Length: 134
Length: 134
Image (tube, rainbow over all chains, first blue to last red; front, side):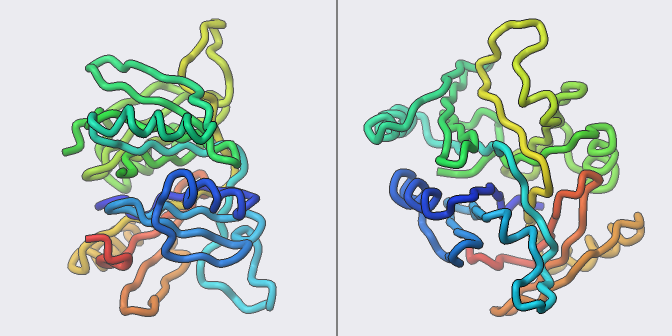
């Protein structure tokens, strides 16, 4: 089975939208104010929820069939880009004043760098197929 | 760019391992006791971390280049299976006494069901390509 929805949580969805739409240039395909932003990333979905909304039952008292969920703290996800695009991505983020928090050369020859979204989630961009997934 | 690492958090990694290895039958490819379990799911990785470990600096005082992360609460991820395998998965989970918390028929004809991992993370299995990703 494939993972098709990966979630992060953000208590300020406007800032999250500025970042994921404006800086990352992901494709926003669905939005519900103060509840969620749904982005498409190639063959998967990145869902960003405000936990203050998804941890609550519907405000109108109706039973929402989607089970409650919501986390606080710093989540983590990693993206993979081709070796040719790795440096471009780093430059593009730095140009927009996104701090590169760390960069690691991994055993096996791959490398990756880390940065944060406005909610403090830890994002990583990996150069090439580190996990031999393809 | 592709999402290649999706994370969940669990403060009891032994229970998480029983569930993800024993019930879900995912392929465990790396394990560090009291820190993480790394599973491969087809073309992606599911990383399960104990936030009590990943929120801390290394216990030996050395600087870990991996930035701190870790969340508490219920995360959410969704998997996709082929329409032919959807009912099989539901039956297989029910046979192992995993409660199906909710099942939803979505506009557009897809459907999905929800259950929990031992840490309370909300997992969803979707029948077919709900998001038109392929």
